[in-house]
Image 1: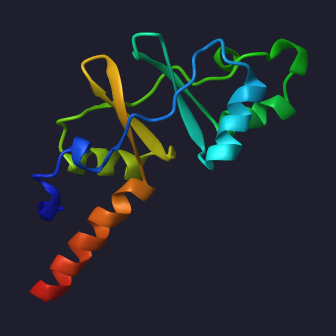
Image 2: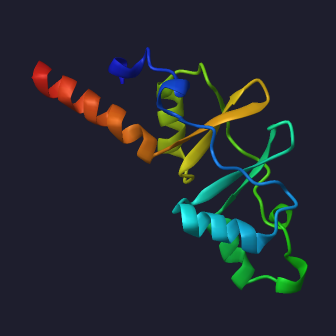
Image 3: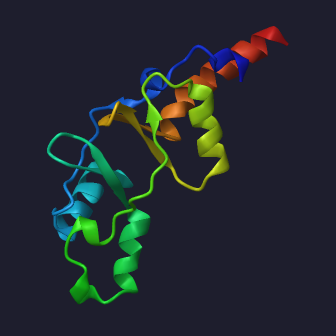
Length: 137
């Protein structure tokens, strides 16, 4: 992926992603996912520090667990996340997305959430690399 070595996470991330708080109700989080046609939401504190992620996959647990015990995002969110800094090389982000099952990774500046990179966000870069390689052949 030599053509992408100078590209940074900040160059392809979706900035200022929609977020929810841990106390957000699950119904509200589901509504946001559906209305925005997205599959995951970062969970942040008031200082925009990343606390976790709530995804469509997490929501599937509602079908299998005692619904009475599930009320807010913090009841289902994933706490352990792989994150990247905004100045990290795109190559390591792509390597992570290739090696893991998740569809998006949070991008931070220090502890503050500044963006998300999804597999879809990489498509424009992949297209540019493909065009460059086709011209070289």
